[in-house]
Length: 450
Image (cartoon, rainbow, N blue to C red):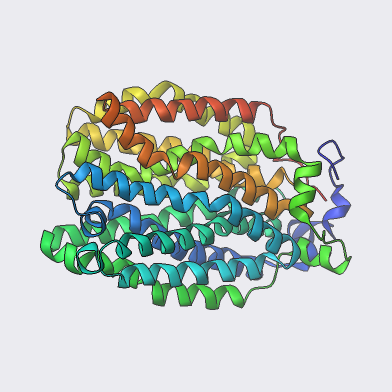
């Protein structure tokens, strides 16, 4: 079906009679939905704790793998590797999208967390540059690429999975589990990084302390794999498979029939891509290296931002169910356009109170966007190409703008000497996202496309 095709009728969604049957189509009850939500939360939490550990330990990783008299140079190389791992994400999006739309959401999600766990543990076991020379950053690059490949299937797959399980009128709050669990994983990484930097000496951190979060991926990841393997595939995918309606080449169908939607969705992702990685992962480095505050305090303030994000994410998902995806997403973009640069100016005052205020403000603004984005993206693509459409748009946007955000922010500051340059970059992303969402249809009160 092309972009101009009709939406599925309510009957296409399966038996939705009245009462519990209407709220829970396909005979799915509350208990099964609860298991899906919990499993999606735990799996995504594990995945992004693993992925976020690299960001929160960037300063130490720069010393271990890129030893230099100039720490800024080491940080640029560290964040460059962060960005390189994102370059594989569009390729991963194609592959995971094909698997998810052909074989099933559950299988794709189980394999993604397994690959993430293995590559993260390998990073934790790597010797540093002083031990094996150039092989250290080379192997780090390899495992970062594997992390990026794995992550390219996680966010999209979990979102599509939850949206397809959600009761009518609650897709926004169900899909909010994905960004919520992502932030929770990063919060756990932030707390662990804060604890390690506060209790260990620099020598201990560079010797073995930085390894602990990566090695913790082993038990957490195995738990996530076990839980996901116990789940059923989503109701709409099972129905599609039963009717032998699975497309052999979903990615090709996506580009052939839904390219306009794909372009709009990719542009809409920009604010999430730049905002998430600037506010929630790059910020500790920015505060410690550019603003000049203590690294422990920098991690604590970022933790406050993460708590704000998690605290409001389900509210914004609910608001998008009530008022529409476009209304909430465009409001978030407007707030970023108006307030980002003044917020970065406040960070430069070095006042802890001002920094805390800004972190809470930025976290709340980002939540307004991300709490609605997952359901927005999933609803814009029909079931046959939903995983592919979400994975390609989300990962292309994040590869070009998200993964490069820390490196670009560091380079902008180094080349311009302007400490608020990252704020301008974030504001531009908000402008592009605003236009993309404005050009998109409202989907919150419509049934999923067939």
